[in-house]
Length: 327
Image (cartoon, rainbow, N blue to C red; front, side, top):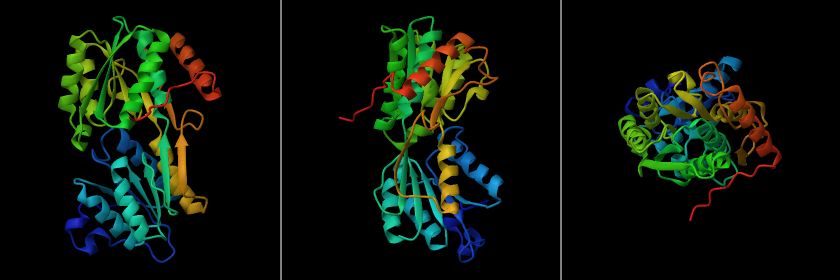
């Protein structure tokens, strides 16, 4: 792939030398804060782009932002230099997408976790509450103390949606279970602070929590490490994080950003891409919970059977999952 991580500070010949010829399909992706190797949200997006490259042989351009001003600047450069579709990962990029998409109506834009209502923008969102509901059930099924925890990243409606589903799922199993919740911060720095994540998790453990779920990007790496060190259980988020601490990670709330990116690139290439809003949940395989060789020792067959039944009931509409409503 063509990396643009340093191109803003370098001559155009270095950042955009390998540009698409006229008519050639040229996809691009701009990652959110935390970077493509956050082992969570951005990394899932990166995996979707990489799979597209493997399957088609078509390289993609990518950029990891380090400050907010870069969003609009890099998108405009990508559009100007021939990108066919630009995928913007994360709600923080909405304003930049809106502005640049207006400037380049012939370029397709796909934004993850936000809505931009323009004729050349596709908005993809997820029903995160459905996967976190199943994770809440799993936490309640395995908890010995009757206390479970949640550590969110930036305190925003999206993360409140994760928390709402988690609490609802846990209380479906044990109506009186206690759920202790903390948010890491109110700025984008909340996504990249593993030390703070570990501190919040340890504080919850001190109050009796024996299972903690994070929805905090790279901050969650600290949450999961703290659980491992304490001999307790964690629940991963966005990507399948079971492998990080086999036997200590109960499951992961999967958010298939990789599927969204892959489909956006593929549809744009095939001519089936369309603007407008798309919402992906369990029924669309957009979210799920993880089960593999790394967590089979802690997520028992009986637990899995119960989660699978709940999963089917959510898809059929038999089991309603509450929707978060911002005040």
